[in-house]
Length: 513
Ligand code: C2E
Ligand code: MG
Ligand code: MG
Image (cartoon, rainbow, N blue to C red; front, side, top):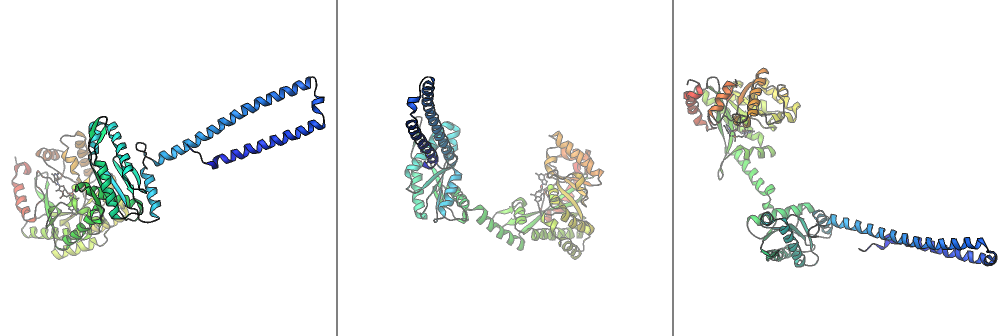
């Protein structure tokens, strides 16, 4: 390993200085010995001492030389180790190609001089080779592929391995067309059969190309998006286009669609009855939103409520649901059916200072008492900014609207904390109720939650009642209300009244059996 001349120069200078000093001192001594006639005066024991000194000096010179050789060797090997470490940090152990971080550095550096297209090559089904033939064969294959790529790439190209079966190529100073050509020849090289331990293997690869982006890391990410598109479409090579990016194109269309959905009344509300355990009476329903999409059909809330929350559409969505749910409540009342309606409030709704006033106006317009509405909030929502949330909750509560904690047990709020909120009802999450019959610890959680909540003056609703056994057990545990598929699924407005009547007739529910 070559060591930089700059590191040896001080050593050389020092040796030279010392050698000059020795020569000068020896000359001085020679002159002195002539002046004082030292050889003539040195007789007897003094001559012996001088001889011994001369001999020991000779020995010291020999050992000194060896010591200096050792030092020099040590210095050289240390420099080599440093160099080796540096190399290893920048290179992949297996193939000797540039590592991800080194490649990223190189990319950042070379982009200063102009655009640098990036190619990302990923082997198809390489995992199968590793799983079936073992890692040793997989590794040998990667080494051969790396060698081939090295041979195949044009001069000036920089090759790296990002990890696993992913290789990256930088093509400073080249355009998109050239990048596609390089990608095709690289894939042809990858596709040629490889022989490992006598076994002939054939693999194919896919390549994603990205040519322009804000940062070096963005460029790599775009190439990654393109390689996935190439794989999905079995296209071999794909050049990144923003429309491939799930984060931009598709989401944007969905947001535009959702905005239209809220405006054009594509949101529909289904209602799930909440049934009293003691006598099977339906006292209320929960309003659950769905999106009647012109192409995708009925879309569940999990697929668009989070998106609405992120994009500020949630306020309009909540208003649409409230409007439909309270209008439904008005119509049931007109038919003689006294049902309360529970509407889910999102995290943002808790920070919506105008909500209480809008609800009051709606209730007034429909001539409904506030007691027919309940708002469900999740514990995590209430925990996010307790101060501000409390303010909005108190205003709602003061307006006579009942509040409940939804999905209890899935967040981290303690019951004691929740009682500081002006809530009157606790809904135990369905994950505990569904497994209550099988899992003794879930049964304990349900039982103690019911007891604790009652102790704090709260009403308890069990969500996700899917069997008669769960219904019966909840009755024994003293739970107040239940909701679940065994009783009734969420359904459109017009099916609710018949469903409520049918539940009244069901002996197992009305406990007349
Ligand atoms: P959630 O408020 O906890 O609503 C209960 C969910 O459990 C509903 O799902 C309901 O269909 C489902 N469910 C009821 N009984 C059973 C059962 O026995 N077994 C099983 N496996 N599931 C049952 P859905 O309608 O898909 O709603 C999911 C979540 O979406 C809701 O959970 C709520 O958090 C949210 N959501 C629904 N509508 C709205 C809305 O208008 N606004 C807001 N912000 N969120 C909503
Ligand atoms: Mg709910
Ligand atoms: Mg729930």
